[in-house]
Amino acid sequence: MSDLNNRTLTIEKTFNAPIELVWEAWTQPEHIANWWGPKGMETKILEHDFTVGGNWKYVMTMPNGSDFIADGVYLEIVELEKIRTSANFKPMTEGVELQVLLKKIGDKTHFTFHVIHATEEYCKQQEKMGFYNGWGSTFERLYEYLSQKTV
Image (cartoon, rainbow, N blue to C red; front, side, top):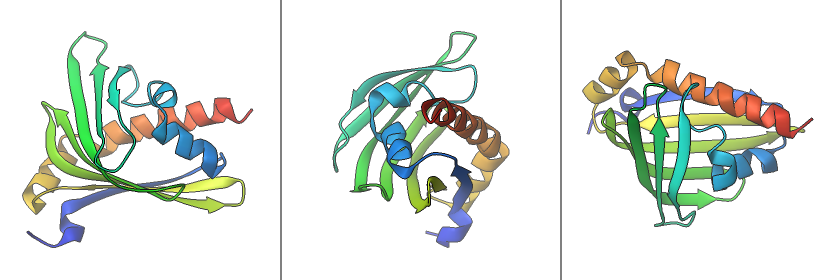
């Protein structure tokens, strides 16, 4: 195992939404289906057991009809603060850990997203494959979704 910093890709954002709403967007299937995945993808929730040890499984359909399967197991849940889960995005990415960290800043929410890879090489490969574009687009969708909910 190489140094954690060299195996981790991170995105940070501040959402103009209360932390409770951001938490719901990450933890409730009816919210997740509305923003999960890059722009142009539709997401269906197949399984969502939001408990430590619980499984989640989503199907993301691209505009061309191809499907991506996303799944994982929740490793740690700290209400309104932290979600850790294993994750696979078949066929592109497998065996990573996602960390969602939330911090209340008044009526806004600071969001830190880490993806931890098994090796430094795999991390670099994922970055070159478009990590920041894909997740960036996904979090733009989340930002827009949260904006609609706070009006």
